[in-house]
Each structure stands twice: as structure tokens, then as C-alpha cells.
Length: 126
Image 1 (spheres, rainbow, N blue to C red):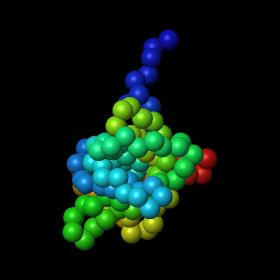
Image 2 (image 1 turned 90 degrees about the horizontal axis):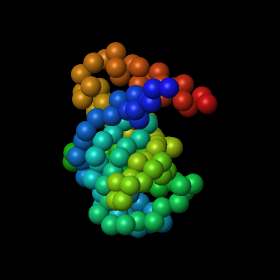
Image 3 (image 1 turned 180 degrees about the horizontal axis):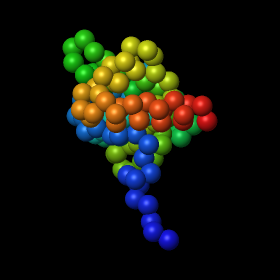
Image 4 (image 1 turned 90 degrees about the vertical axis):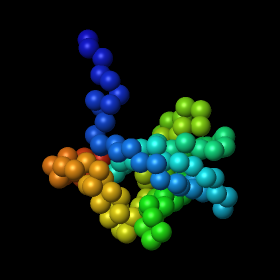
């Protein structure tokens, strides 16, 4: 049986992005850097080793520029050293609009964005 590479199983296109961000846990902020981003979550690299509970919701703040910020409630999906995969659990309308626009600009293909949005809608119904 042929093996399926992890990237082939993804339902969301990931975009490389190096925005500064902060991961908040119990009112304490931990600086991190966004490695890549999708409509469903992101991969971050933490500056410090933060113990994380897979069932807990953390707040991630991504600063895109001086006036645009994405805020999302995230939980741990996977971890490899200081690189942490986070899945989005909660996001407000302004943040999803900013995230959608960022993905749209980076994909450069409205059809790909539409597929991601359909995959997001079907995964939220599960």
C-alpha cells in the first residue's frame, strides 16, 4: 500500500509567514514567531520551552502590522522541540476576515481559497 505524505493529507493550504506573535497562557505572554499559517491553525516557534496541555485553550496574538492583528484561541496539535503546531478553536469575525485576506493574497488563486473555506466549513460541522 503506498504511503501518503503528511502534506497530501492536509485540507488547508499553508502559507509561510514570519509575523511576530505572542502565545498567552494564564495571563503570561510568550513571544513566538509564526512559521506558517492556514485557515485552520499555524506552526509557531517559541523562544522558550513552554509546557503545554493538549486539552487547554491558549490565546495567540499575531501582529500583521501596526493596525491589523489576528486573535485566536488555539490548542496544541503537535510539538517538535520549540516548534509547535496549533489548531484554531476560537476566532472572532475581524480576525477571520484578516486571516482570510492574508491567505487570499498569498495563495494568489481564488479557487484554492474557496477550497480551503469549504474544507473549514465541513470540518466545523464534524
